[in-house]
View (tube, rainbow, N blue to C red):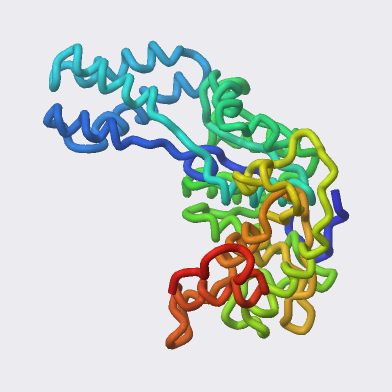
Length: 341
């Protein structure tokens, strides 16, 4: 871990899981509700009501018992069989992790401790394993294990203790205002999450000093444009030496064909936070924790996603901006057909 810069307000990140990192697909449930003559959201409103949900989140009942309580509240409206079907559709809703958020948190963890603080069930460990996130954080504070849930101050104190820093030196990230308010009342720096940029802004100060930054400026205002950024990528990857084989290359943002191509080491995360600027121009890349074998064009595509100016300049819309990248990096002629305009 790096020492804390004087202007940094936190020395640890405490982050929520659901609706920040993990997202559920409730489309099948909504379809079942419509078929049952129920308004969409009826099952979730019932299932996540405190009197129904809290016993599960405190580890006092099983998921089966939770489904039974949901079904009990729906039986008069749709019948027992359909009520149970709706309950299980909520309980078994598929979920995914937001790769952009995971990447931001993995980078943050190279600077400060990361602790997940979540109102969750006793199945959390297995669910993190399914998401390949068992190693994401330094510690996981689960309401079901600790038998206390957000926004109770006790769970915040536990999380700060696991992080090893005072509460007033913690950044707390959550999607619920009530939980944010509770953290703020304890002296924590807070970030209400709605989209990845909210997390990116909150973590931006981790890149302070050393010539890096500016973290929150739009790509359009940086001098040099894609040719400047492309030069950084090109010079980084034209070494073209075979990578030494290694077990366990990071796969979060890696080229899916990287293992087959294997000739170059791609950075895989060439966003603005990982670029050092000098006098407004890109000069170098930092944080190679997600680097892995891949094709040169993969870094071009990843950088274009973050860098290509998409607004604010007449005549430079997304197609034109993206089409300029292969030429700017010098790879357009040798990586396949030109980018469509």
